[in-house]
Image 1 (cartoon, rainbow, N blue to C red):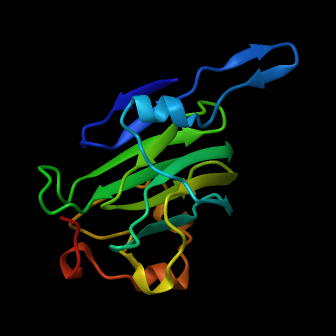
Image 2 (image 1 turned 180 degrees about the vertical axis):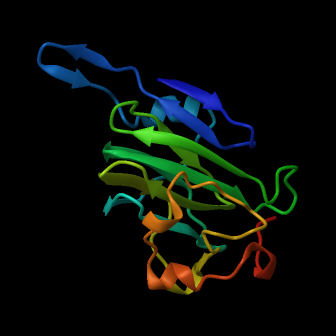
Image 3 (image 1 turned 45 degrees about the horizontal axis):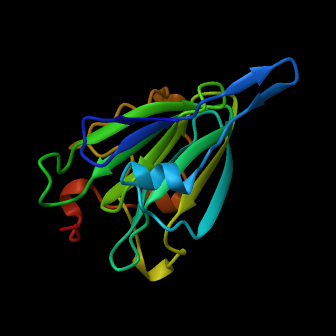
Length: 183
């Protein structure tokens, strides 16, 4: 398992060591001891899974303190563009985003720590996404930022005429309208 730092502090890409043979493949998607050795110390309490079709954009989602969630995101089938936005006011990269292609083929995972908004777009015909979280869902703490926010200017790698967004996500505030942050 390799853990690669990104351009945003504490946001890391995890690539498992894959063992392949004539039967198929095997890899450790999560190993608490190896994560802890690398400073990733989240007590995951829930696994979530979604299935989406091409053009779907989910996000940008988060929960505010004290129910903020760290997420370990991976793709079981298909390909997504996974995006994290730094909302930590004291961070040198506050307001910046990072994106990476996660797929069933590359088996990469993105570790999204507390203090980030998270979302993804589906680049393949369909995609199954699974992610671990370290806090249970708490409806009253749920927040988000509009996916097409002009300040963030995220390139979701999806044609505008293909974009599919939920009614809930289309009414989210812009980055400049949010009145919460993480210290």
